[in-house]
Length: 239
Image (cartoon, rainbow, N blue to C red):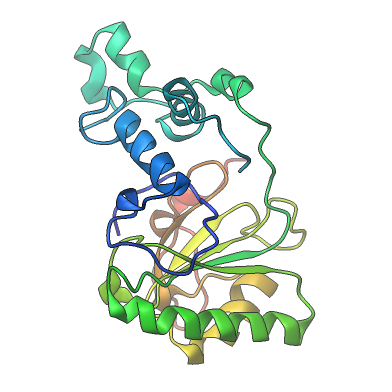
């Protein structure tokens, strides 16, 4: 899985898109094109929600406030201060944008991008239906939606589970856990293990991030004989 620390979720009201979402002839396409122009290849911030005003300055503020790196790698030491600033997050820029709303309920995002690959196009809607049924069955108020390409269609179904920071009793509250090769038969296990009991299913794990930006895959060791997961020493929070 390609490394990531942030994901931008754009509500389009659709359940499928053009192969490249930046080719969409819509405001969502405008948004993606503008962001890629800021932090994508060739943009000044490229490193080798409520409505946001449709201006270059607003897109630059969004990328700088939420998407750029908090700290730079030592390999960037030779850059000028201006170059470092262009690559680094500045959360004060958020004041130029509408106030964001935090996730308050479990949110499951499933790749259903049939315009990009039929594996996700076929499996995505099936998983969406199964997850909704599983949450209703357990009386859990959750959001389940289809999203566009997130990489690795060969791992369909691709599922990202976001657990709200305020989810009491869940060890992974505030985290985004990315699963691959999720089939309809895995849905109830994902809901029970991850959403209800705060456990990561190692056999399905592609990666993920904690609220403080740590890589979940690097924090966990393969399952022990008893089936449990053990945190690697460097992944444990310091006392």
